[in-house]
Length: 473
Image (cartoon, rainbow, N blue to C red; front, side, top):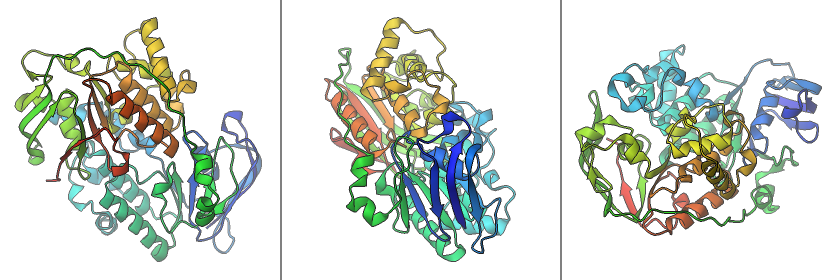
């Protein structure tokens, strides 16, 4: 397929680039659209799909013989996981409540409408056959991404647009996806447009790169010229670290966490089995494991979201669970960010209120904040370079910008324990460096504890000195 964008100008100003858009993708080419958070990458892919009304210019798609094609482009944007997966009828914490979780459809229902042999073929390619009978809500964020990518591929588009498809996948799954896309390119002529916020995810089979910065398309280049000409540093310059001060309460406990022989099961399926773990005050841990190994489930016990905590031997802040403390007594000491928090946080409210909701550990802002709390929220947005988003609606900013806002939310109450589950998801290269530096500086404070989850070893903060590995059952 060939796509030609000729002097395209959006009808409405909020969808416009700085200059008329001109771009051509030739038949059998594969592209990567690369740029920082909020640069306009998704806006560009919306334009080439015809989702943006034009004031001037045109977007034309033709097959290899030059015949017009109205359909043939499929897009998968993970910012929309919530609506694509049937989550709108579900609520945060539902996946940890076994009775309510049973109301969720089976993962195989995501493939309804496809022939069984097609499901078998693609499920085998991505290694998700054994997950078909899990409940959708019970899928880990990485497993859910695999299903949605597989579903998009099963529709056999001529051009597939994938927005940061590798984030959230363990190393083996990233290799599998890379191999699968390369194979479909050769066997079925699939063309792929990757939307990337970091160049380390750039596959070898990409032919051309379209750099995007500040709603402006830079000249397209080959992969070799992109790195030879130093475009990576142009798109992702060093971000100066901002000074900050946190007020920490002098803790009186010895252990942040003690777990003994922890088991979590849903029906006949064990998610976690026989886990022992101790985290002392001031220790910094990385929690590692493949997709579906139970990392997020274990953290749901720590953060008070999972009722199975009461059926296990768990001590938090030197106090055994189930001895009279409320879930809010636990949460007020913890700064928490996870893929689940992001998935369910779809409140159409200003980003400042999203950050301020961290004071109450709520989805949305159910209580009125004091002037001092709003000032603190603004300060943390400044620290993370997100102060310009304060009055913008959370649901109308990019996925990476949302993740930056949620990071500020995790820090807003100066917690004693940071629980950060894949916190750098969707952040561009520059913002990752900034966020990592902030985490390291914050954890240098006296007695601050950290539990950090990632599938990228190079994203682990330098302050981490201890590691816990989980293995898929």
